[in-house]
Image 1 (cartoon, one colour):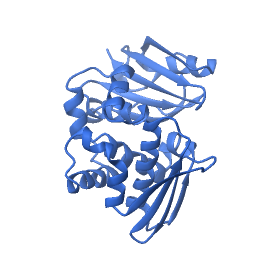
Image 2: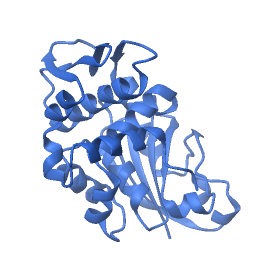
Image 3: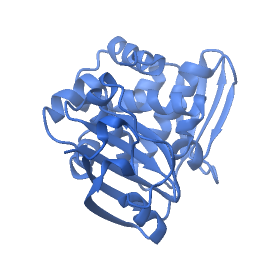
Length: 256
């Protein structure tokens, strides 16, 4: 099983240092940023989801003033705070697009900023308390996102990471798997879900091929997602949503 990542460690250190112990405390994200030396501003930044300008131990985080989805704004702020915490020695300026936030899980610095943001907004120790032994689903993840004032994508991944069930969360584009979040059952047994082209037998493939915003749920052969011998002859319940405005989708796989 993989060790906890540096971005998650950093996020938890901040949560601990600020005495944050409940989801209610997390709503004060802007105040958290100020405590860490970063001021949040709202302005017009066309084509970008977030911007970070830093000088030493101080920074300004700018996010779009016209963003209507608060969960997306909060993730953008936390993402830029991740760059400030993790990467300011490398660069004093980050301009992050929608692609960086939603498709950047396979780019090291963007993945690290995403992991930091997800852990800061949905701390694992709180998520475990919230989900208990519930089986992951998109509806459950939406409830988690609402409880923590987060966007859906990190809520799905945090749900998967902390569930006791055999499960995986998939972020995909119109034709490829971009990121895989695996439950501890998968990690401990070294079970993989394949990156690369979407399999035509997956629910994700059919939703992406249609290109419309829609959702579906079906029982699929596990081979549609993995070549692991462990999955031979087994099935996943795959629940998936595709968002045409973003050109991405999310699938939740539950081993049955």
